[in-house]
Amino acid sequence: FLSDLKTLNIIPAREYPRATKHIEDMVDMIQGLVEKGNAYEKEGSYYFDVESFPQYGRLARLDFDNMQEGAGEGGGITEGEFDKKNNRDFALWKAYKEADGEVFWDTQIGKGRPGWHIECSAMCRRYLGDSIDIHAGGVDLTFPHHENEIAQSEAFCGCEMCNVWMHNGFVNINNEKMSKSLGNHLTVRDVLKSPVECRAFRYFVVSSQYRAQLNFVEDAMKGSQNTVRRLDKWKAKLESVELESGGDKVDALAEKCVADFEAGMKDDLNTPRACAALFTFVKSTEKLLNADKIDIAGASKVLEVMAQLDSVLGIFYQVPGFEEAEAAPAADVPDDLVALLEERLQAKADKNWARADEIRDICQERGFTIKDVKGGPSELVPVE
Image (cartoon, rainbow, N blue to C red; front, side, top):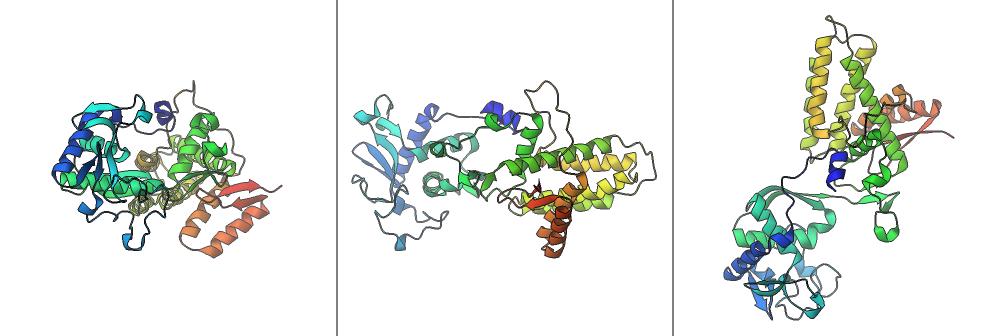
């Protein structure tokens, strides 16, 4: 896991706490919830009293009035746990049973093990405090896990647990949900064999809308590799500019790029929109570079903006575990068509469908078809 974080240029967390090391923190919270009237004990187990927390269900927007008890599976509102006061109540601590074997702790509230939800609340409070800014997780955790976290944390602390909740979509493999049971489970080491592939995968992920399903297909990776190689060429050209003065001013282009990029990021982390701003900037500066109209000062400004945006995207980095950086091979797709593909992305964002169709026709005439990939960037595929 930690090795994969480095491979994908992900900043590590300051702490990686283990639930087994925080049993006392969980017990303290459970005891506090009982004292406040938000939890109760039944036959050695402890449950959160959902009726004691009127806000329960607001994250998942649950309508309990129209729910039938016992109708769902796996949602936590089912019949069968007869020691609870209410079917909606959830476990904070489970009394020991012989089937638990060696998985138990002897604590002030008895012998047993913690419920799933209390673990996260206790560790979150220990390391981040009573209230946090952002809580993330898969969309499948919205209910019951995150809903239960909110209830037990806010009932215990008396303040809002989290200001912003961000739930990401699932990862699909060739339009199927990734699952070990389906035999399509992949790891970073299974599919990323070179530095450019590692960086392309990172670009593929960060340039996709986090709430949407991410569909991992071979064509998507090929397109992302072409994009990374294009960015590398652009950067190399900027670093090799020799014109001392007299180049066109790039300040206005730079300011618009940063403004549009930030607008995209502020729009619920709309990274496709942010990346469109980046490639509008790339296209404009590439034209100036090809016409020898950028001087050293201008190139420095462009590189400064690139570094500012890359502090978010994290595309330019040395992938660990490789002796030398891989020399970027020539892309299969001509640079001008890659540029047109990025222009089409912006045209679609602007709802300029006529220009988007025109670019599709141009690429078709040049022997490439555009494949729009759900959950990822569009790809240029050679016509067979």
